[in-house]
Image (cartoon, rainbow, N blue to C red; front, side, top):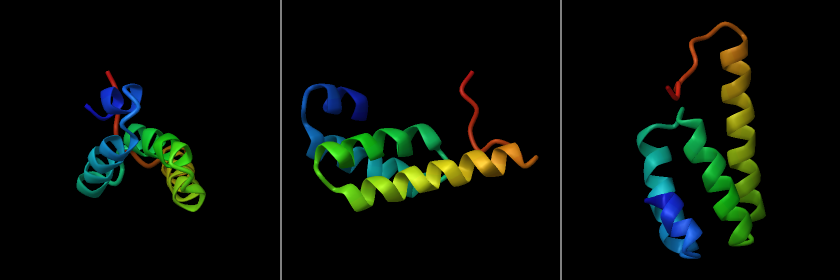
Length: 73
């Protein structure tokens, strides 16, 4: 739904949905990536950069032998 909202140009709705997803599952990187895009579109640079840092941290944890927080199959 968040992707559809973003694609329809409804950035506030996409933001709301994605923030809920990240709040419920902070390790779900795809939501964080999309949230960063939405924040950029809303010109919320600091919030976008925060999400980008979180994704890099999650990726680093996964590469260091920890189980990946989410696997898309």
